[in-house]
Length: 450
Image (cartoon, helix red, strand yellow):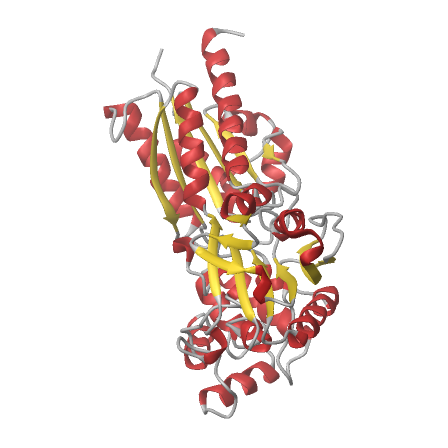
């Protein structure tokens, strides 16, 4: 191995280490312990102090890819004070718990197991009385896992809407606006069912801007979106006529005021509620930046709010890497350029992949063999699209290696087929379930030319 190959190998290893450091920084178990304490028989959550003697029972509920370790932390903190509980997690994301029942269910398409888990949660929060406390654990993935369709809309109908939305290119904010208006629990519905009990939410953010009403479709916070907005979005993405008739009927009734809107700011359901954000994408990026600096790079965080079409965002990142090489701007090499958020893939082909894999493939094509650049993009939840990969990694040799194997990078990109492309090269990022979820992390390493 020559010096150049050795440097490239080190850069690839460094990219993996930086990504792992970012994951560790948003470990849900640690996040709960960092934000929640018990002192003098009081529960301290952020700046809130809740006297435990004022509550007869504590019920723990929740949904999302990261809530199992969050629930484990709550059990360790509160022990036998937890009277009952139920959470819904993605398949393979459960943990053994003592007092909180764990339902595993399908994601991103809701299934019957999610419906059963949601019914259990509804039953528990409806039992909550005025002097009870409901602790709600929320993370990304909760929208699909809290599968409690409104009356008149079947699970099959919701599955159809979800599939159409995921393929439309709609942002998570837009998708969740629609989900809230088809659910008994989303959009503040859980808080309304739990009223008049106090509801305290611990939230791990997987959305750009950390909007509490968007994370898992905001089951315990006021909702500012409307039925009319949901209808306009479905029409705007050209899928209004494709969605099931029952869904169109329900939204029409909501627009006409024949179905109650989701609870808004000032609703009595939120009088005794509080919320604490325990983990974010920026937190992960800051830890990644510190790790990169320890490895000898000059780090820069572009943004934790990256959105837009995956391929276009990839071209922008590739352009930044080229500028670093050409002029040393915005930061001279050795550089670590970091960003986070959640891009969108508008499906054009029938290939297998996810937004992170597609991002890396599009970046590699745009870089076109630029030397001394490594790019890694991964979903912090360990899942990228409908695949077992979190993302992928590429470098200056990626396109050459692909063509030697008879692979046409552009053809795979046109078919949204990044997964088999990187699988053939051995460059998929496989982490398994991470049990956290704070969107995606993009890492670009740029070294000086020899």
